[in-house]
Image 1 (cartoon, helix red, strand yellow):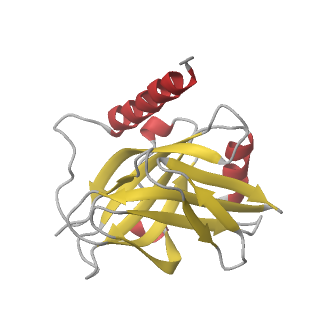
Image 2: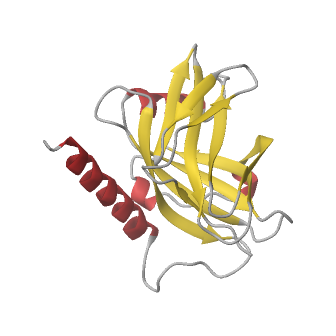
Length: 196
């Protein structure tokens, strides 16, 4: 029984969520909600558990490297714990959320600049099964929309396990996986903007 997180389907229903400071957001299927409100950064993604066990979201990290394809996974101790319990049931959609409210936070300035410049970035989500075992990280590539909206695209760039051999194909690199995710979203964006 191992959970495996992916971006939700584009056809999945919108999900609504709120934060402890009463901020509220809506995120569409296959999307991430990325907002800066009153100097606070709010992040959320619509996810789907395509594995065989409940996914318990434990921690997260953001990468805003200029060369995202070469960005390594951080160490688990570098991740930030989830302030509330978030679960995604087997075969179902759910959400991930986080916020950075302090401008002095080490992630704040780089992430804010990335969002304001409409550049892609990475969100790594660390999760376990409901017993706290089978730790895994799924890396999501978050790509800005063509307009100035808050609904960005998100797609899986890579998975890695912390307690067993990695699930990559022999010879495949992080750069390969991330580039595939970027290419897939570029194709999708082109298809969605073509005249009917």
